[in-house]
Amino acid sequence: MTRKWAFVFWSSLNIVINLLLIRPFNQGEVIFSNLLLIGITLVLLSTFSRVVDNSWFKLEFVLLITLTILSIIRMLYRINIISGLLAIIVALIAFITITVILLVGIARWKSISKN
Image (tube, rainbow, N blue to C red; front, top):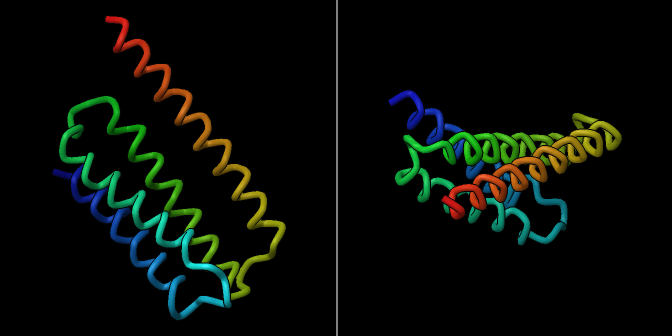
């Protein structure tokens, strides 16, 4: 039960932050990236119900937390609380994390399909 609440919490936080980035904190940017992150969050949330007891859950959960942290950093950058350099460093770390998660997911998928 704790897993479900944690996943719903991070999903809700990501959706709320991206909705805030669409309207109140929008500084003339295109809103497609916010809608894309909301869509990714909803896809992760819908697939969660099928993989609670699977090892894929850990990958999706780390991906969701990474997306939420990226959204928080984007919001803080837009309201000028953090510098551009810090935002770039966090974005690069998140990019590396997402790349590693995808590579691990592909490796697990290939090992499962071989068996």
